[in-house]
Image 1 (cartoon, rainbow, N blue to C red):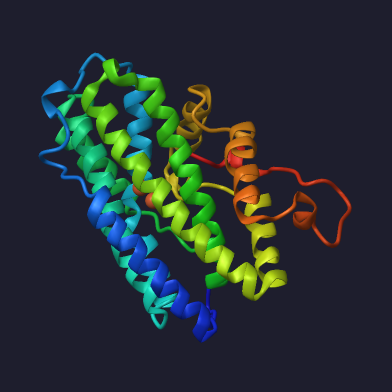
Image 2: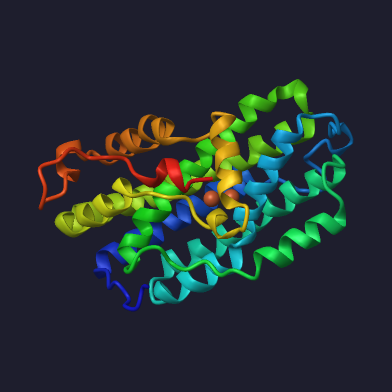
Amino acid sequence: MASEMHSVSPETAAATYRLYREFFDLAEKKRRWRLRDDIPWKQCNPSLDPAIADVVESFCAVELFLPDYLGKFLPKIRANRGSAWFTANWGYEESKHSLALGDWLIHSRHRSEEQMADLESKLYEHEWNLPMDSALGMVCYAMTQELSTWLHYRNLRLLVGPGGDPALYRLLTYISVDERAHYDFFRRIVKLHLAEERPETLEQLRRVLNEFAMPSVYLLADGRRRIEAVKSLHLFDAELYYQDVYLPILADLGVERSELRRRASSREIVVLSGADVAV
Ligand SMILES: [Fe+2]
Ligand SMILES: [Fe+2]
């Protein structure tokens, strides 16, 4: 687990802070949404396919691990104000996601208050730990995880459609836009690191991108069933990960596929657990 802080140069720290201020200004101006007022809660659809409600519950479960995401990452970057303030703001936005998904499950009557309380208590028996052992690795992981999360929500939104459940459709629209903005911020930070320390950053990207798995749902007792449900609805699998996450990230960063081949091996990149362990 991450035990050491990754020190960044004063220039990278200053650039990170500038990027955060841009991110924050844009979020305040264009991206804020209100849970209570901006979602047409009266238009929840209790007859929506229960398989979709199950997936909403899985996504909600991933978002509910927020205390671990924040509590474990923030201490690693506390001396970098841009990263630390971003993480605080990110936590606020992510906290809304689990509230919105949980509220939809209850308003739509796909779950009762008791069922949601039960999910929460089971979930907090488990603890999520940082998947990478350095702050730089975690930034690469967070970038990949945010784009993958965006893809999950984007595909679920397309599946629901505007007429399927107007409340769910609207909240998935807001959440997808947030996830895409999170990805964009992390992508800019990874680009800063590529400019400053390309070999080290490529090494972290190699580890993350070639063995990516989404966080936390595998911690649940029925995690495998939940992951299979996501695959069967074509929301996320190995091929979608490769086409809509892996390749776009390389293009956005200006990194060649050849740069991500493992140094010790000549074998081609094999996308591993994006399929197996992802929600
Ligand atoms: Fe989220
Ligand atoms: Fe996010």
